[in-house]
Every structure is written in structure tokens, then in C-alpha cells.
Image (cartoon, rainbow, N blue to C red; front, side):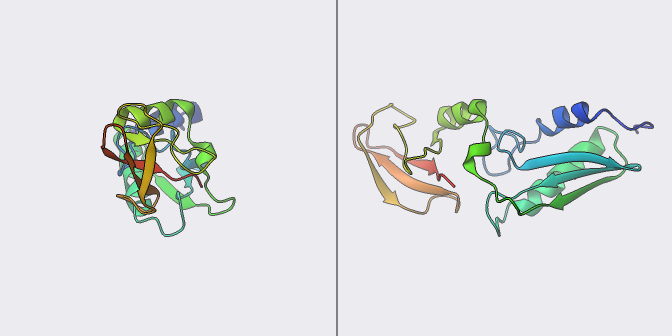
Length: 155
């Protein structure tokens, strides 16, 4: 158990190891879900913003954060939700965008659709459905390799 207040930079580093439960190749920090880390007395407070209001993974993310920090020796960890300003795909790090694409998920683009197929890099694409494997993704297909893929919607 940690007996002194840990360095906030260390806590951020630990949080960067907590994977998103729906997309395990990126962390909750990479996605910009973790908004703030603070100490209030002997309690570590982690403020999170869901990717969208009502995201079913939010409670799992909060539990994963608490569990990860407790495993590092923090005795008292609390998560708080902050809904304003609303989460945006602009908060996803560049490194996470690259890892999404390597994983087979097209990263968000300002134009509202994928730039290229994450499998073969073709730009000959079509949207199959506005809704994908999770509400924050849409289903697309590459007309070149004919493979379907998820596109992380730009929010």
C-alpha cells in the first residue's frame, strides 16, 4: 500500500496502462476519457468523461480505473464523471489513431467518413450502416478488398 501521496504524473502513467474495454489497443488516457487526476486528502480522484452520454462502457471504465490504481497500492480511489464539455474525438491522441487503424478500425476524420480502408488502404469505400459494433462506430466496407470494417465516428 502506498503510504504517501503518489506523484500525479505517476498516476497518469498508471492510467495510460488501463485499456478501453471495447477497444483494448488504446487506453482510457489515449482516448481522452480521463480528464483530470487530483488528490483530495488521502483520496485519489479521477475525473472521466464518457465518449457519449449513456455509453454502457462508462461504468466498466470507472471500475477498471479503480481496480488498476488499487493494484498499484492506492487505498482510496474515486471516479467522477464530467459531462461538460462533452467528449470529442479531437481528444484521441495521434498514437491512438494509428493503433486503431492497425487494429482494423478506421480512426475518426473531420469529413465524417474514413479516409481509407484500414486493411488495404484503398479509398474506394461505402458505408453499410451508421451503426457498428458499438454506438460510437459505423460499419463500412472497402470496395477493393471487399472487407467490412468499423469506423470510429467523428464526434
